[in-house]
Amino acid sequence: MSASKERLYLYDTTLRDGAQTTGVDFSLEDKRLLASALDGLGVDYVEGGYPGANDTDTAFFKKRPELENARFAAFGMTKRAGRSVSNDPGLQALLQADAQAVCLVAKAWDYHVRVALGTTNEENLKGVSQSIVAVVDSGREALIDCEHFFDGYKANREYALQVAKTALDAGARWIVLCDTNGGTLPHEVFDIVSDVAKHVPSEKLGIHTHNDTENAVANTLMAVRAGCRQVQGTLNGLGERCGNANLTSIIPTLLLKSEFADKFETGVTPERLRQLTHASRVLDEVLNRSSDKHAPYVGMSAFATKAGIHASAILKDPSTYEHVAPEAVGNERRLLISDQGGRSNILAELERLGLKADKDDPAVTRLLEQVKEREAVGYAYESADASFELMARRALGNVPQFFSVDSFRVMVERRHNARGQLVTVSEATVKVFVNGDKEPIWSAAEGNGPVNALDAALRKDLGRYQNFIEAIELVDYKVRILTGGTEAVTRVLIESHDTHSGEHWFTVGVSPNIIDASFEALLDSMNYKLLKAGAKVV
Image (cartoon, rainbow, N blue to C red; front, side):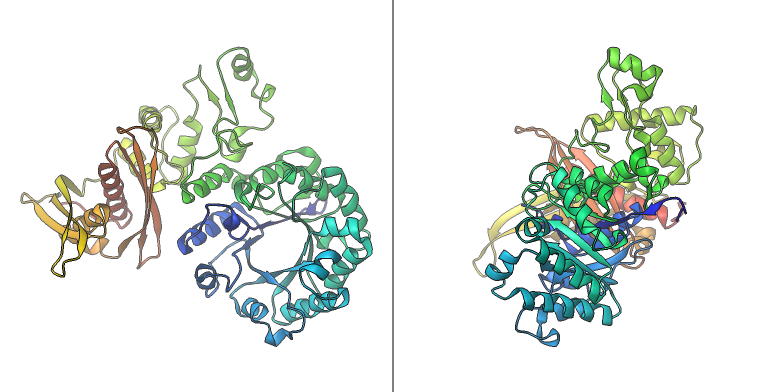
């Protein structure tokens, strides 16, 4: 850490707060993928959820994900009134979880202590202290999330401060002030945090805001100015009701705006910050929803300008209309009068893949045009890295043709089985020519739906390449309708997993026919695996 700058710590709650969003339901694989993306971004803490709350979170905390930068945290409640630490199932689940840190939520508003918990102020403080001590004694870092702190402070300043100081005295590493209903305004946050910082050291103060007045980001920044040194939030501002503080906006503001950048530093380096747009869009793909084009910093239109006086000015001096350089956050400038947009991103991605190419190489130009053409008809490569790598390598002329599919057929039949039950049966047939062979390989398989049947048939027999693909599993399948009507264009995103190596990769297909789009993504998945495994052609 720089001697001249204070350290700010970033605590991500996407996997817990984000899961409370209406319509959001993370699978175990989703959580692992997002934890890895957040870790790569450089956040200091990734909160995985609430152990014991559901089967997914319970499984997630049996063995914590392997993170290089972030500490893995669990979330839960302080012990219940009238129970001992050892006799509280919720607290014990936290103490047994495979986590490095535990964030406990505690009531900081005396009204809620009486009405919601049905106990006394003194008993609540006792529960806070004993719970924090139990976490610390277990060898984990302890945090306290002071729920409804700002409302509690306004109602009874002395008690809200007492809750915070009790947790501090018990050994909590972080005292997090939570604006639970999102109703506090920026000037109030600044004044209250400034007062709290007189009683709790800044290096132990955190902020956790909700966005019900569209002020969560502003409230967070004001809290940092007033003394908080831990920032909590979610990727893309995901969260219940109106969402949480949006780390996708907060992080670049802290790193790129001089008022904060000159005073503070985080675990997000300039190099990692360039992954921000990618991480944002990975989350959107996991949720199977369209990205917010107008999102600050990471939206497709965040640095877009129509032709005219603004575009002319940008060509002469980009800083005229761009408050930060788009490439700093992994985004790109979009000018309708320029055909150069995107080249730097292509070159950066080629470099990441270990593919050498000169910026003036005609192959790079062809690849850029191909990306633009494909995106225009619905392809999206932000979360389909495997498909992009195949396309890039083909443009540069270094992808072998391992096999070709001459034809495929899918049949879906609804009929009565031998027991007289009405069932739907899917069957697929695939005709494949393996490189170097003159005779085709015919494979047929049944599946749980037409795509599963196609997947099973394709992987049933690939001749000399069969041993390379035996461990592949299709673990996720997402469909998005891009245009309406009976001739709708469909995009399919497939996640594949190698059970031997543990590797995950994503491929995409687009077509008016959902089966054709699915098969395109499946073919990319197989070819990507063969390429990465070093399979040879005859």
